[in-house]
Amino acid sequence: MAMQQRIDYGANADSWFESLSDDMAPLAAELRRLILRAVPSVTEIIKWGAPVYEKDGMSICGLRAAKGYVSLQFGSIGITLDDPDKLLEGTGKRMRHVKVRTKGEIKGELFTSWIKEAVKV
Image 1 (cartoon, one colour):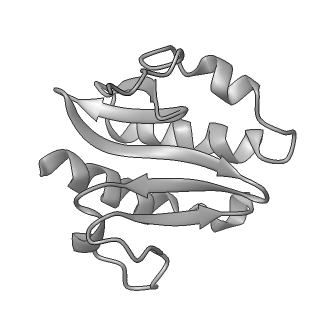
Image 2 (spheres, rainbow, N blue to C red):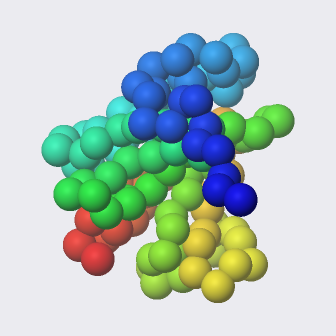
């Protein structure tokens, strides 16, 4: 039996950002700005219910909101990213993410380097 595709698959991400709670919305907006500045030609769409960022059809990263944090996620390259401060979490074979609970936890330079590294793969 074929899986039914989500109604929001491929949709514009603005509604996702607008749906966030007052404490998570600023974090997600800042991460969004960081991604769009790092890779101006990125495509932003909804997949799996959350924003995914792609370039030339290749996944770069994604965002996911949870109670108390917004997660910046990296797919198949997650385990290869330079992570001197051991911020990346995850136990999957390749995917890793960093949980951001406050604006102070957004490491602009480091996160930008990860995003740009993901584009090169």
